[in-house]
Amino acid sequence: MGMQLVRDQVPCFRWRGQSAITRRNALIALGGAVASVAVAACGGSPAATTTTSSTEQATAPTAGTASAAGAATGTSLATTSASATTTASTSAVTTPTTAPAPATNGQATPVSIEYLYQADDLWEKDKLMLEPFKAKQPDITVSPLSAGSNQLEKLRTLIAGGNPPDTAWLNIINVPVMAEAGALMPADAWLARDWKAMEGDDVYAGAWDAVTWKGKRYGTPLEANPFLPVFRPDFFDSASDPYPTALADKGQWTWDMVVETAAKLTKRSTGGSATQFGIQLRTDPYSLLHWIWNNGGDMWDADRTTCLLNQPPAVEAIQFMQDFFVKSRAAPLGDEAQKLSGGKYNNMLSGVIAFEWQYSGGGSLMGGVVKFPFMAAPEPKGKVSPIQPHMNGSGNSVITGAKHPDAAWEWVKFIAGKEADVVMMQTGRTPPRRKSGEAYYLKEVKYPPNPQVVTEMLRTARMTPAVPAWNDFQKILGQELTPVWQGQRSPKDALDEVVRQVNPLLKPH
Image 1 (cartoon, rainbow, N blue to C red):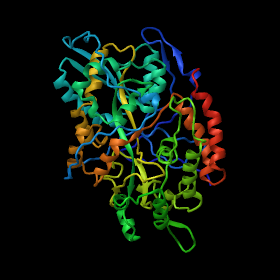
Image 2: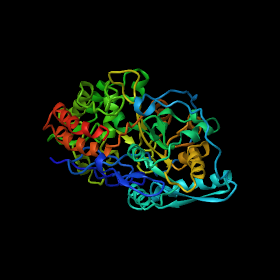
Image 3: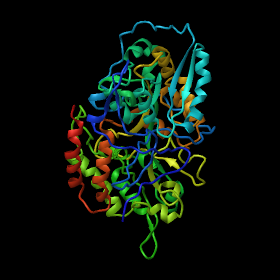
Image 4: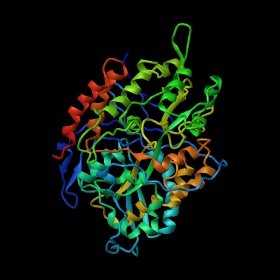
């Protein structure tokens, strides 16, 4: 059976094609202030995937979501601070202490800055930040630039033509390659000056990693979405199975329990065909991380110059995933869920899946869309403690060669602020990016119905560890693992080949 990419065509997900590149062709010469630019190859838009073919690869699942968040009441949790576990190459960042020179324009003279936003439909929500920004910065006008069909390609074209925007949205997977190319202005000097005023420590530690590369920060975070376990309580009730939330409260929500639960919630006809699946697994690189981390492994070494996927913890994690497809058959293979439901979805929206992980803006993939009930679940416990949730994200950067870099920074800074955080939650774009936003989120946001699970994950979630060669890596990984999910290849054999091909791409050229 061939694998197929699953396109969840709902308002909260967008798709872009990505082509693979090498580090050697990632730079092109430019005149003027920008000396080089990454020929990066990602559309930088959200995606949700399950198993993929060798010719179809998943795009980056960012946190950009677009379904509703409604008013509801909730229980406020005390805000706590916890640093996300991160690798040394990007997270050896201390709070800035050295202030830069004063802003050159001082915002005394009115200026207009260009902002290349993420996607046209998402800008309809993000533009709600313009009015409160203008109230704070009346001398700065933000002129939005349409993302078109491929936001990153447009950014590359503008830079190559000597007319870069002042600031732009960037998917996390594109920050390293663009930073290496010198296309992004480091934000450390601005952060040194403004850290206290903007309450930089209030932003979740993991969120900052969306704009961090080799110890430097290249902007501020826009999105920070946990890879959220979601389940259908009605399916659990029918099977008289305890909810993952209840099991977690007792310390019993473990990998072994996930296996047991998935098997119990998988239903078959008398002929043996599945009529309901207990679990759905995404198999893109992002979706492997929480399994690998919670089994004690990692994707890269601390410098992100060596791939560790063929080490025992990672191999065991992929074997654990393979068993759902091949051994228990509790997870649908390829487009089985879509065919079973007769619809267009292969995830929980198909109506035949009891449990899955989603990049969904804290539950907004289904909130206001589906008629069946759903709840968020905690990340199950693997071999190591503490449990390590995964988040994916994006940020906004000031572009090298910006006409008004100081004014551009004011916009980038505002987007990461408290007022903008509320706008992002109100529109269903993201859960809070700040600890101070938790009270609002718990009280006002409707989806998921148990939002405290999301805020607890956000405090310790670890961001996707991107590398400049991510697109090449993603293509290689998809090609080599496809037969693994089909039961035609061992995880160790496939991951040895991944490491053999990827390691040369990680070395400085």
